[in-house]
Amino acid sequence: MDKFTTLTGVAAPLPIINIDTDMIIPKQYLKTIKRTGLGTALFSEMRYNEDGSENPDFVLNKPAYRQAQIIIAGDNFGCGSSREHAPWALFDFGIRCVISTSFADIFYNNCFKNGILPLVVTPEQLKLLLDDAERGSNATLTIDLEAQTIKGPDGGTLTFDIDPSRKQILHEGLDDIAGTLKSDPSISAFEGKMAAERPWL
Image (tube, rainbow, N blue to C red; front, side, top):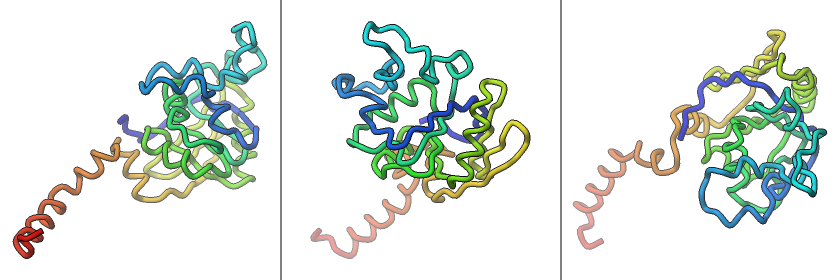
Protein backbone atom coordinates (compact mmCIF):
# COMPACT_ATOMS: atom_id res chain seq x y z
CA MET A 1 0.00 0.00 0.00
CA ASP A 2 1.29 3.50 -0.82
CA LYS A 3 2.59 5.47 2.15
CA PHE A 4 0.72 8.61 3.13
CA THR A 5 3.04 11.29 4.48
CA THR A 6 2.26 14.72 3.04
CA LEU A 7 -0.35 15.41 0.37
CA THR A 8 -0.63 18.67 -1.53
CA GLY A 9 -3.46 18.78 -4.01
CA VAL A 10 -6.62 20.34 -5.32
CA ALA A 11 -9.70 19.79 -3.15
CA ALA A 12 -13.06 19.28 -4.82
CA PRO A 13 -16.07 20.69 -2.94
CA LEU A 14 -18.92 18.17 -2.66
CA PRO A 15 -21.16 19.63 0.08
CA ILE A 16 -23.85 16.95 -0.15
CA ILE A 17 -24.99 15.19 3.02
CA ASN A 18 -25.45 11.42 3.22
CA ILE A 19 -23.39 10.51 0.16
CA ASP A 20 -23.80 6.74 0.30
CA THR A 21 -21.65 4.02 -1.20
CA ASP A 22 -24.12 3.47 -4.05
CA MET A 23 -23.60 7.09 -5.08
CA ILE A 24 -19.84 6.61 -4.83
CA ILE A 25 -19.87 3.40 -6.91
CA PRO A 26 -23.25 2.09 -8.16
CA LYS A 27 -24.11 -1.59 -7.75
CA GLN A 28 -23.62 -2.53 -11.41
CA TYR A 29 -19.86 -2.07 -10.98
CA LEU A 30 -19.54 -4.52 -8.09
CA LYS A 31 -18.98 -7.61 -10.25
CA THR A 32 -15.22 -7.14 -10.32
CA ILE A 33 -12.82 -8.03 -7.53
CA LYS A 34 -10.02 -5.95 -9.05
CA ARG A 35 -9.10 -2.76 -7.24
CA THR A 36 -8.17 -0.98 -10.45
CA GLY A 37 -10.31 0.41 -13.25
CA LEU A 38 -13.14 1.68 -11.06
CA GLY A 39 -12.10 5.32 -11.17
CA THR A 40 -14.06 5.95 -14.35
CA ALA A 41 -17.22 4.77 -12.57
CA LEU A 42 -16.74 6.96 -9.49
CA PHE A 43 -19.95 8.95 -8.86
CA SER A 44 -21.09 7.74 -12.29
CA GLU A 45 -24.76 8.60 -11.82
CA MET A 46 -23.80 12.21 -11.11
CA ARG A 47 -20.81 12.42 -13.49
CA TYR A 48 -22.53 11.13 -16.61
CA ASN A 49 -25.75 11.83 -18.46
CA GLU A 50 -28.04 9.00 -19.63
CA ASP A 51 -26.36 8.97 -23.05
CA GLY A 52 -22.95 8.44 -21.42
CA SER A 53 -21.71 11.97 -21.97
CA GLU A 54 -20.19 13.92 -19.11
CA ASN A 55 -22.40 16.12 -16.97
CA PRO A 56 -20.55 19.46 -17.13
CA ASP A 57 -22.14 20.62 -13.89
CA PHE A 58 -20.64 17.84 -11.76
CA VAL A 59 -17.62 19.05 -9.83
CA LEU A 60 -15.14 16.37 -10.95
CA ASN A 61 -15.93 17.13 -14.60
CA LYS A 62 -14.99 20.79 -14.23
CA PRO A 63 -11.47 21.59 -15.51
CA ALA A 64 -10.31 22.91 -12.14
CA TYR A 65 -11.13 19.63 -10.35
CA ARG A 66 -10.31 16.88 -12.85
CA GLN A 67 -7.06 16.14 -11.00
CA ALA A 68 -8.49 16.57 -7.50
CA GLN A 69 -6.88 14.41 -4.83
CA ILE A 70 -9.03 15.61 -1.94
CA ILE A 71 -12.80 15.73 -1.50
CA ILE A 72 -14.49 18.11 0.95
CA ALA A 73 -17.86 16.48 1.62
CA GLY A 74 -21.04 16.93 3.62
CA ASP A 75 -22.04 15.02 6.76
CA ASN A 76 -22.22 11.23 6.96
CA PHE A 77 -20.04 10.42 3.96
CA GLY A 78 -19.92 6.74 2.95
CA CYS A 79 -23.17 5.60 4.52
CA GLY A 80 -25.19 2.74 3.05
CA SER A 81 -23.86 -0.69 2.16
CA SER A 82 -20.40 -1.84 3.20
CA ARG A 83 -18.94 -2.28 -0.31
CA GLU A 84 -15.15 -1.96 -0.34
CA HIS A 85 -15.43 -0.97 -3.99
CA ALA A 86 -16.20 2.57 -2.77
CA PRO A 87 -12.68 3.34 -1.50
CA TRP A 88 -11.27 1.35 -4.43
CA ALA A 89 -13.04 3.70 -6.86
CA LEU A 90 -11.94 6.81 -4.97
CA PHE A 91 -8.32 5.66 -4.87
CA ASP A 92 -8.31 4.62 -8.53
CA PHE A 93 -9.59 8.07 -9.51
CA GLY A 94 -6.75 9.63 -7.52
CA ILE A 95 -8.50 10.65 -4.29
CA ARG A 96 -6.19 10.16 -1.28
CA CYS A 97 -8.16 12.11 1.32
CA VAL A 98 -11.83 12.74 2.10
CA ILE A 99 -12.72 15.42 4.64
CA SER A 100 -16.12 15.54 6.32
CA THR A 101 -17.74 16.15 9.69
CA SER A 102 -18.67 12.46 9.96
CA PHE A 103 -18.30 9.11 8.19
CA ALA A 104 -20.13 5.80 8.25
CA ASP A 105 -18.07 3.40 10.38
CA ILE A 106 -17.49 0.65 7.81
CA PHE A 107 -16.52 3.08 5.06
CA TYR A 108 -14.21 4.89 7.50
CA ASN A 109 -12.43 1.63 8.37
CA ASN A 110 -12.21 0.58 4.71
CA CYS A 111 -10.47 3.85 3.81
CA PHE A 112 -7.52 3.08 6.06
CA LYS A 113 -7.25 -0.41 4.58
CA ASN A 114 -7.00 1.10 1.10
CA GLY A 115 -4.63 4.04 1.48
CA ILE A 116 -7.18 6.83 1.88
CA LEU A 117 -7.15 9.27 4.78
CA PRO A 118 -10.67 10.08 6.04
CA LEU A 119 -10.48 13.23 8.16
CA VAL A 120 -13.14 14.33 10.61
CA VAL A 121 -13.37 18.08 11.17
CA THR A 122 -15.81 20.42 12.89
CA PRO A 123 -18.62 22.12 10.94
CA GLU A 124 -16.76 25.42 11.27
CA GLN A 125 -13.57 23.89 9.87
CA LEU A 126 -15.51 22.26 7.04
CA LYS A 127 -16.97 25.61 6.03
CA LEU A 128 -13.48 27.12 5.83
CA LEU A 129 -12.20 24.20 3.75
CA LEU A 130 -15.20 24.37 1.40
CA ASP A 131 -14.51 28.09 0.91
CA ASP A 132 -10.91 27.23 -0.03
CA ALA A 133 -12.01 24.41 -2.34
CA GLU A 134 -14.48 26.67 -4.17
CA ARG A 135 -11.51 28.69 -5.40
CA GLY A 136 -10.52 25.93 -7.81
CA SER A 137 -7.15 24.67 -8.95
CA ASN A 138 -5.27 27.76 -7.76
CA ALA A 139 -6.14 26.91 -4.15
CA THR A 140 -4.45 23.71 -3.01
CA LEU A 141 -4.51 22.16 0.44
CA THR A 142 -1.53 20.51 2.12
CA ILE A 143 -2.25 17.66 4.51
CA ASP A 144 0.61 16.64 6.77
CA LEU A 145 -0.20 13.34 8.45
CA GLU A 146 2.80 13.40 10.78
CA ALA A 147 2.03 16.92 12.05
CA GLN A 148 -1.74 16.31 11.80
CA THR A 149 -2.35 19.59 10.04
CA ILE A 150 -4.26 20.91 7.05
CA LYS A 151 -2.72 24.03 5.52
CA GLY A 152 -4.88 26.21 3.32
CA PRO A 153 -3.79 28.19 0.23
CA ASP A 154 -3.40 31.38 2.26
CA GLY A 155 -1.26 29.73 4.92
CA GLY A 156 -3.97 29.19 7.52
CA THR A 157 -3.57 25.90 9.37
CA LEU A 158 -6.11 23.56 10.94
CA THR A 159 -5.29 20.58 13.14
CA PHE A 160 -7.00 17.20 13.20
CA ASP A 161 -7.11 14.19 15.51
CA ILE A 162 -6.46 10.62 14.40
CA ASP A 163 -6.06 7.32 16.20
CA PRO A 164 -2.30 6.60 16.52
CA SER A 165 -2.60 3.04 15.20
CA ARG A 166 -4.53 4.19 12.13
CA LYS A 167 -2.02 6.97 11.60
CA GLN A 168 0.81 4.43 11.63
CA ILE A 169 -0.99 2.18 9.13
CA LEU A 170 -1.21 5.00 6.56
CA HIS A 171 2.12 6.60 7.36
CA GLU A 172 3.98 3.33 6.82
CA GLY A 173 1.74 2.06 4.02
CA LEU A 174 0.70 -1.08 5.87
CA ASP A 175 -2.18 -3.35 4.96
CA ASP A 176 -3.66 -5.75 7.54
CA ILE A 177 -1.12 -8.49 6.80
CA ALA A 178 1.88 -6.18 6.86
CA GLY A 179 0.65 -4.64 10.09
CA THR A 180 0.38 -8.07 11.69
CA LEU A 181 3.85 -9.07 10.46
CA LYS A 182 5.36 -6.08 12.28
CA SER A 183 4.46 -7.96 15.47
CA ASP A 184 5.91 -11.26 14.24
CA PRO A 185 8.72 -11.40 16.86
CA SER A 186 6.22 -10.97 19.70
CA ILE A 187 3.80 -13.45 18.16
CA SER A 188 6.56 -16.04 17.63
CA ALA A 189 7.84 -15.56 21.19
CA PHE A 190 4.35 -16.02 22.59
CA GLU A 191 3.73 -19.14 20.51
CA GLY A 192 7.09 -20.59 21.59
CA LYS A 193 6.30 -19.93 25.23
CA MET A 194 2.84 -21.48 24.92
CA ALA A 195 4.27 -24.56 23.15
CA ALA A 196 6.79 -25.04 25.97
CA GLU A 197 4.32 -24.48 28.79
CA ARG A 198 1.36 -26.29 27.24
CA PRO A 199 2.68 -28.84 24.75
CA TRP A 200 -0.69 -30.58 24.64
CA LEU A 201 -2.29 -27.64 22.83
